[in-house]
Image (cartoon, rainbow, N blue to C red; front, side, top):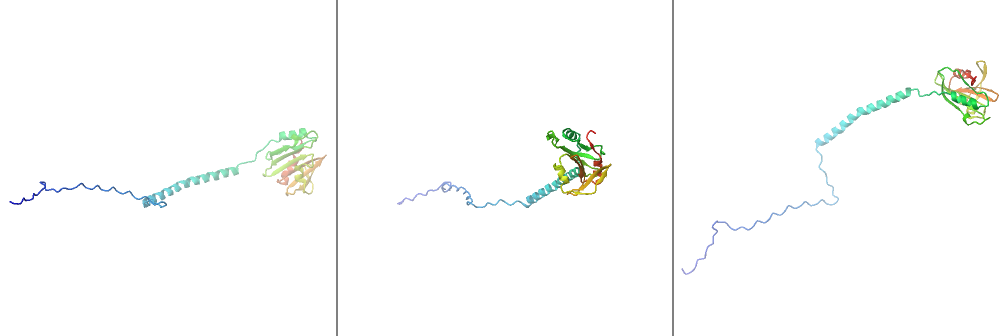
Length: 226
C-alpha cells in the first residue's frame, strides 16, 4: 500500500487520563464582630425563667417565718424590760455619816421610815469640805405611790439644792408635823415643799409625792446618831 496508515493509540483499560483533583479550599473563618457592636446572649427559655421566679418566691416564703419570730422576740424583750423594776435602792448610811463628821452643825436625816420608802440617791459635798466649810446633804426616796420625795439639809442658804427649791416658791399656810411647825411652799414646778430653819440650818422636804407622803418623810427627820 502506498501510504502508511496512521497508528491509533488506545488505552487498553479504556480509561482516559484524569489529572489530580484540585484541593478543597479551607473553610473561611467568620469575620470578627465590628468594634462596638453589641453581642446579644441567647434568651433563656421560658422554663428557666419560671424556675428562677419560683426559686425567688420560695426564698421569700421561707424568710417570712424567721422575720416574724425575730419581731416577736424583740417585742417580748421590750415587754419584759418595761415591766422590770429599774429603780436601784442605795444605802445612804455612809453618805450621812460623812456629812455628820465634816459638818459644823448637828446634821439631820430621815430615820425609821417605812420599808416602802426606798432610798434611791444620796450625796453630799462634805468630801471636799475643809474645816468650817458649809455642808449639804441630800437623800432621795421613791415613795409607796412611786413618786419622788427629796430631803435636803444645809447650813449654806446659797447652796444650789436649796436655791432650786426656794427661789420663786410661794409661801402657803404653815403645817404641823408631829408637833413641829413647818413652812409649806409651792415651788415654781408646782410641787409642795416643807421647810424649817433654825440656827442658820435649813431643812427641806419636797418632790412630786403627795403631801401626806412628804409629811411622813418630814416626821422621820431626826439628828444623826441621836
